[in-house]
Image (cartoon, rainbow, N blue to C red; front, side):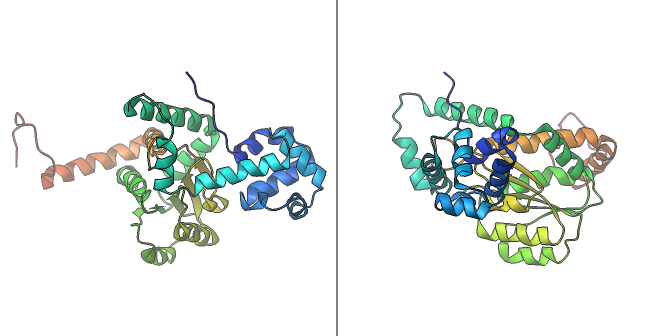
Length: 297
């Protein structure tokens, strides 16, 4: 049985954008530019901040599927609560949903749903633009993540540095990030990972990199890290699973899809680079040889 697709308010606004009036689009842009804080407060305050009328706020919230502004804000507050949930709260919420289904099947269902919804949200043109951006090896690339998501940045780095030059992985110690900012110049690329509970150090770092003219590619969740306002390309990927911790499967899916596309785009140079690397592996005897192959050294 298919599950009901959960769509965030930001996604509802984006999906309905083409059908809004010019004034409603003005409101929508205001809400999206500083989401979700731009949507908080009274209807009068939201309207004034966007320089529109209160009836415009009511009409737009109804157009995106809500009974009115109070229903819109109730859903928004529930969404914000999901964003800041700690592992204990997440486990408590999942464990209260009684089911006789084995955890393997529960988890598999959640992951498949995450993949399907994430794929629905990915713009192929944005994906291709990121592939093109990452393929330009003359521009130095940096990768950074948070306390947990740094492992994804490290995984991406391990493959990227086999494909191209000028790739730097920033370890998850924010105290060391400022020194990297000294070397960042316009045209450099920063690939960042930030999911709920969004890390202030990482958001601040993205802001500083953006101010230096660095192009940012952000991997985040369905709600969207505040760092998104500084990113040129954003992947909003589903992360919820029947666990105290979030799932990284959808994010890993996009990472590996990007790597596959990059290999194809740069194969002439990538092949030479990998061949040189394999020779180094042989010289250092890093990997165990097949016993049937004689060592000529």
